[in-house]
Amino acid sequence: MSANAMPLDANLHRREIGSVILALENISLAFGGVQALSDISFDVREHEILAIIGPNGAGKSSLLNVINGVYHPQQGTITFKGEKRHQMNPHKVASQGVARTFQNIALFKGMSVLDNLMTGRNLMMKTGILQQALYWGATQREELVHRARVEEIITFLEIESIRKTPVGRLPYGLQKRVELGRALAAEPTMLLLDEPMAGMNVEEKQDMCRFVLDVNEEFGTTIVLIEHDMGVVMDISDRVVVLDYGKKIGDGAPDDVRNNQAVIDAYLGVKH
Amino acid sequence: MKWLGAISAELKVGPFIEVVLGGLMAGVLYSLVALGFVLIYKASGVFNFAQGAMVLLAALAFARFSEVMPMPVAFLLAALLMVGAAFAIERLVLRHLVNQDGIILFLATFGITYFIEGLGPQLFGDNIYRIDLGMPKEPRIILESMFEGGILINLEDFIAAGIAAALVTFLAIFFQKTATGRALRAVADDHQAAQSVGIPLNRIWVIVWSVSGFVALVAGMIWGSKLGVQFSLVLIALKAIPVVILGGFTSVPGAIVGGLIIGVGEKIAEVYLGPIIGGGIENWFAYVLALAFLLFRPEGLFGERHIDRV
Image 1 (cartoon, rainbow over the protein chains, first blue to last red):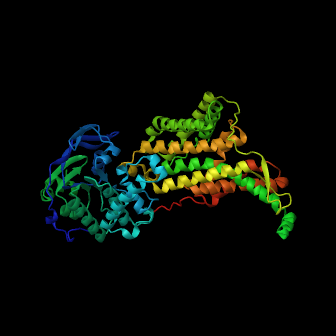
Image 2 (cartoon, rainbow over the protein chains, first blue to last red; image 1 turned 180 degrees about the horizontal axis):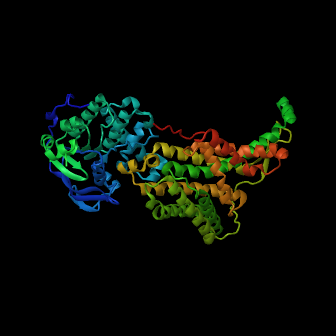
Image 3 (cartoon, rainbow over the protein chains, first blue to last red; image 1 turned 180 degrees about the vertical axis):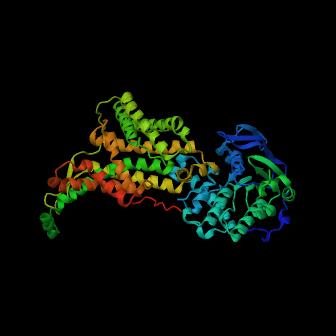
């Protein structure tokens, strides 16, 4: 099902696209003998929505995991906010304002929606463990402040009615939404979304598109997303990077990429 | 009240209550050890076989320290030692096993167990040491007016139960209400997701091992003051395994209730079944009960039931 019919307007993107916030240079990643990524370079600019597309197994998720610091590439450098590194570290990346969602939802299933979102703000909580053990004074005030912010996100994502429900009991589409909420709770400058709309029906996809665009517009969050639905990709992204067999075969505005012969070959197959 | 006394004399309610109370008190101590298991399992998904060894180490440390210094100082020092152990375990073992299967971490705790079992006596000696917490030891007889002969209780046991209850309440609130508690639960649920929201796994592991080290210290002190600190503490701690099977690996209340059920169950079995099928029931009753639970309710009384989507 294509998302072309969605009432989305490309003109919605009114925010200015800024300078380069993340630059990947010559990234290569191998698992044993399998070359997952070879010599990939591209930039992400501030406030833009960048889509990474490609057939299954092209290395899209691996690339996200490299940015996020879960995988450590054998070669190449990553420059984030002006700091050049060979590899990232998940905890450090998170504290520098990068939040993410996962392809196979990685929520804390036994915890309520509210608690899941609150974990997103853990990094911002400053009181020490001993103080927390007493749950008194500063700790309690801090908890209230963060709770208020989380409530705003709950309202934004329209999940008020499920805030106390354990996440494991929610249907798939809502879980995806909660996962976005947890990422947003960290108030990230950059958001990595791994197939945020996979397995959703049209209505859920429309909602998710709306949230992604709203986040980008209202908070100026830079968004890097992996998506298979070409309709969605063409509609919401400012720029598209195309991967195939771990190599970058296209990079540009949605329309340019659509007409790129290498991209068409990768998707439709080509006679050798 | 007279009629009650008459009935009780007939049915021997007095002795029965005595047996149950004795069981409850033993159960509280099982619960305390089980609590250490549950904490680590909840917070890191690791079944920590070393909990018994940690009880021994903590008790040994406290017993030897308190020989040469005032008790509160000895307590603090022993607690610090357990925090140090938590740091060492994280640094030397767990850090290298991030994102590994549960079974691998479980086996790693076997290694930790044998190491601590060797190290503890090496550092602190391998005799039997006394811990005297100054709790009243002499048994008392209460409710003499209600039952013939009254009920024999041990005040020490009641104080121990009170300490355990306070500790459990505190931990339950800590887990539910604070940011650190939330982070602990998050790590237990999903390592990778926890990392992605910026929860530092290493620090969480140090915290949770420290907390369970602290629980081990409290358990070790109370066991030690009852039975003396000796190597067999490790074996008593094994009783905590059926307790967590019964109560559920992920439930703090489960550890408590499971401990009480096993404590009472084995005392009743010993006293009332013992004469019929021969003694020694106390030694195996807990394990048979756990086996029955594994057959009919594998997630335990309070454990989370896992229903997987197919």
